[in-house]
Amino acid sequence: MTIFDTSRRDFLRNLLLGTAALATTGLDLRAQEALAQNKGRKLGVALLGLGKYSSGQLGPALRETKLCYLAGVITGHPEKGEQWAATYNLNKKNIYSYDNMEQIAHNPDIDIVYVVTPPALHPEYTVRVAKAGKHVISEKPMATSVEGCDRMIAACKKAKVKLAVGYRLHYDLYHKEMMRLAKEQDFGPFMKMTGDRGFIFGQRAWRIDKKLAGGGPMMDLGIYIVHGACMAANGVAPVSVTAHEEPKTKPELFNEVEETIRWTMDFPNGAKCDAVTSFNHSADQFRIEGAKGWMEFKQHAFTYRGIVAETSRGPLNFTPINQQAAHMDDFADCILTGRETPVGGEMGRRDIQIITAIYEAAHTGKPVKVKA
Ligand code: NAD
Image 1 (cartoon, rainbow, N blue to C red):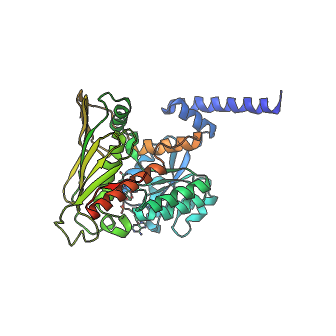
Image 2 (tube, helix red, strand yellow):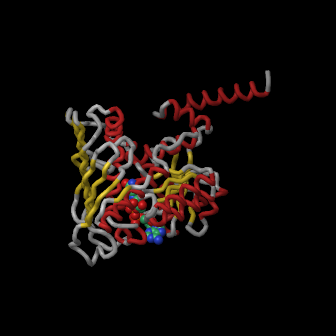
Image 3 (cartoon, rainbow, N blue to C red):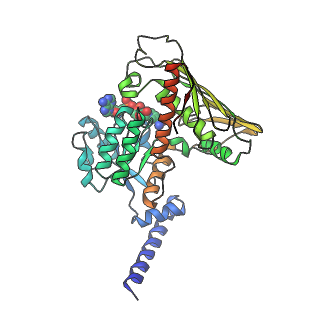
């Protein structure tokens, strides 16, 4: 028997033992095998930026994930780090600041860093994380410029680490159904799309600071409609856009960014999306129509809880899932198996390219071609 045969036999035996031990975890076979190959070790995630989304959604989701767990944090506030260590029973050596975060390079507990800061900072932190040799998830919008996205993609490619964008809706069952309908064309191609997403924003914060947010509701909320319309177009991007900004009702607050913006997106097959996003009204709806039927997200179209949706065949009633947990587990699975993430940097870059064209159209009052 060759050394190869022995080690292969041991490997398979360990794999099966690991798989048997994991069979009760509710993981599918592929994920069980991926975890067994990693000797049952879940991947460690460090959250960078401990604001509302991290504390309200991502931290709790990491209690539900099966292939990864919260291993550390990177924060500008040492007291927050202490609090998180107590809440999540973190090893104190895994608490980093923005000044010493390069040291994660030497920490085998941390495989993935999830960047959850204002968008303008995503490129800088992503590049630093990639240089430290760790995989990255960046929150949406991926950056405030296409150039920022390019830097993120290049740094991750150079460091041979994976990059994903926080597009959690790819894992939501209602949105998966939309993608299935778009692909299989039960209702024909979706030719008419309409979307409205907004909330009333009344305070000065980074979301209306152009330097940190890159824009107003378009960057924060409109991006969901841009992204959703590309999902409904079966992954195809629009070829041209038009846009106009509505007059401001609170010019003193929205002195750097738009308050409400309306836009259209024209797709290569003639499909059209009409949309509006605003920091001056509440809405979260999306409707898509084909020649043979339609799908409508009536409430919480792009939110993580409470989606109400139906198609021309009747109401949809999927069991809600934790979108953030599903997203992070899938990224961990991609790392463990060497698969490409379905929500990679190129997709984040595409959306910033579309949004850049929308802003240009609003600025010039003319239709703008979306660069391929
Ligand atoms: P937040 O203001 O609550 O938190 C931002 C965090 O970044 C804070 O901990 C803050 O201390 C830190 N930070 C680091 N450097 C900073 C700087 N120079 N200025 C300001 N803050 C700085 O914001 P949030 O709601 O948690 O949003 C963070 C990111 O997550 C954004 O990209 C946002 O679009 C995204 N987000 C995504 C979803 C989603 O559903 N995918 C939901 C909410 C937020």
